[in-house]
Image 1 (cartoon, rainbow, N blue to C red):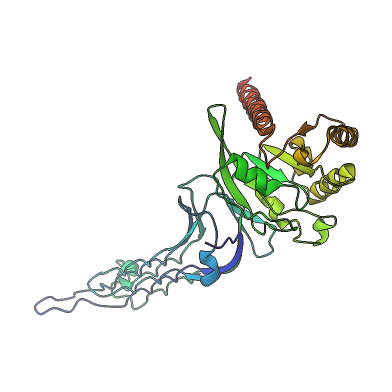
Image 2: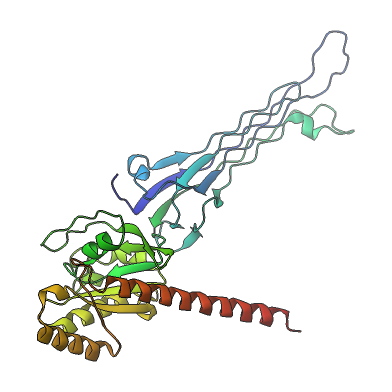
Length: 347
């Protein structure tokens, strides 16, 4: 299945049906009076978050969604049928934006969430509605109200606990394949990964979801390489695993490139908990390893873990560091929610 994380679609709610002008005409029934029914309501446009989807590929082949028109009212006080709803099914993590691409309409983070984006037009009143003691034979009915229409953007941001970032060929796909059952493409040239990937990591009797995105290069925030659009898939992550290729000479420069791109992207990525790792240590001698680890620690101002995704060396240490960071983030969130609850109820 192809991966698609962004789509622009046209939506339109249904028009309401018109009311009817009719009179009761039956043999031996004198002064039958008006009996024109009301029109039916137009269908709504609804977005529903469902399980079993992980891409927006369906919206590559269909970009127009129109709800049904309400049926017209008829004689004998018959109300027209309501128009059918147009339901757009999206995966967890989908965000809905206005046509400008910036105004957020809805954010779907749980299966079962539903949001009515456009409401259908109301049906018009039939002439029976206007009957009164002073107007016993009204000859008027209302047309149904028109539906609404607009273009919207669908954007998918993967729901993951931890995300992998780094330059191309930093070993992110190798690390993902080593700790999960995912089978990403792995090769000895840059930009092997063209689409984000997900895998479930099992460590310490627990599980968490790990996301791998295409590599960043200098100027990605300005569109260089594959750009920084895929960084949206790690916005929701609790912790970032920053892999640096230990076989390159300027490991500190590689670290600064990624940090500057995260800062330029914004959305709080540069402030997330980060586990900095020097990868591909199996290709380094002890002296070179110590030198480059020291350079990376000096550039980052924090600890650096060493590992080899190819051989699995020290991979478990990285996974346990991720679990510890996720637990710390969960504790902070719980304390914040408890403090907010206390502030709310303090007289």
